Length: 356
Image (cartoon, rainbow, N blue to C red; front, side, top):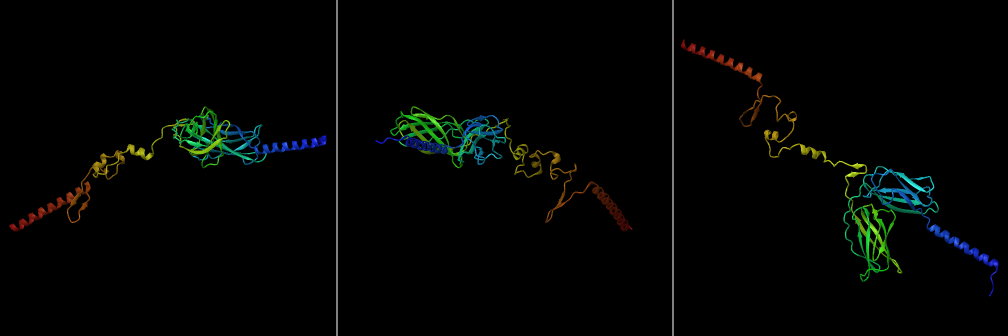
């Protein structure tokens, strides 16, 4: 058998080293993503007041452009006015000032661009501002067929907010498992491209339960359910759950607020009586309204304290004769008296002439 010379060994060793270096570089390239290591506000946190800003620290350098932070309310509407920028320092950091946030569950969606190779990564997390409302009951979900197992899921709440997932896993015959290690949930909201997040439920016998985590967007969520057992391949399936909005709180991030008031029109209606549709006489209208006398219509209350009823002459067409004023009545009385006197004198004269 021919022995290897020292030069051949060195060459082969050099090729091996170069190959290992290439493999290491390839592995590093594949994993070159900038991940969030700390955040403020923190994921799953519950804040009593609105935070002044939002800060994300990453585990590797960020590119000069392409990094992004978005903030969504629970109804999918975006919070306006965010301007994320890098903060100089030891750890690569993105930061943005926040406008005042009303009580709600908020979802932070971030995108990082690696300065090493330009690879992008998008993920999200949620936090709450204000008190957490009591959970609405989650809907009952039918058992899932996950490979050769059956998984019964139960969510901690049916609306947005902090929740947990319980998973009861059985084999094809309905028997409890003895080799269950964990159930993994990879989830994302339907309709928004925010990336994918993951929560792990450690096994306890044939059951598994996640730690508390926050889902902050109403509507449909997609969950990939992965069952991991010792000595066997993973099995998985996909399911959906729909979350409703949390009850509206009457407490703001700054403190309690007054009870909402009724609209102005309703307030006016509650302090002013409306005339009945069947009341047609002025007297009925006066008794059915609470307006002050000075604001009553003139048709209901004449300006003059003396009311003189109009006289009506009957004919083919009734004519309303306006009442005479007191001064006109005196003049007319004098004129009538004069006419009477003249008639009396004239009558007396005619009688006297007949006697002669």
